[in-house]
Length: 184
Image (cartoon, rainbow, N blue to C red; front, side):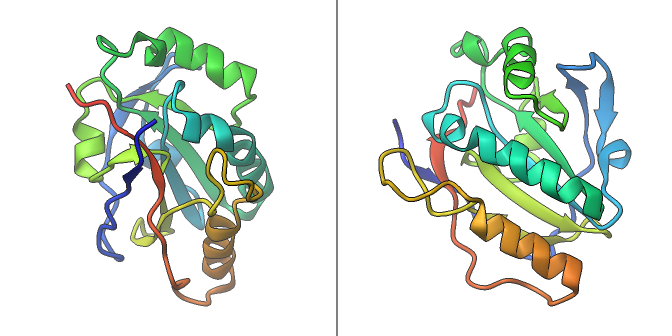
């Protein structure tokens, strides 16, 4: 299990548009289709990473808690499926159904989207405001496999609450930690 930190791209960065295959619905979805009324969370995840497995249930809880507040959620897997077939679209669909993902689980075949967002690890998390400007990037919370801290999404939840309440940016913002994206 590699410990790769996320790249902390500049706050205010505009979300890059994408059009990716949704492994659950079978449709092609764009950021324009998925953008939330008040905010949009984009997770870079995969099926096999122990860090993602550790937080999967909290990702679902957060999405269910914040959808009603106008924040949408999108999960993207960008891993090389030739070397990591367990992260392929069919198994992504199965994983999404097993965890009852209330958000689309998109496959980034070319890895162009991960590169556009400077994603480095799984999970890597980005929160954009209603204008698709970055207001938070980094860890969901400080729980990691084996550190006995609760998985509660406190960091991302606080950032979403700040966004919804118009309080500005939450500080500090700590990098996420996870398995490195499996590049081709």
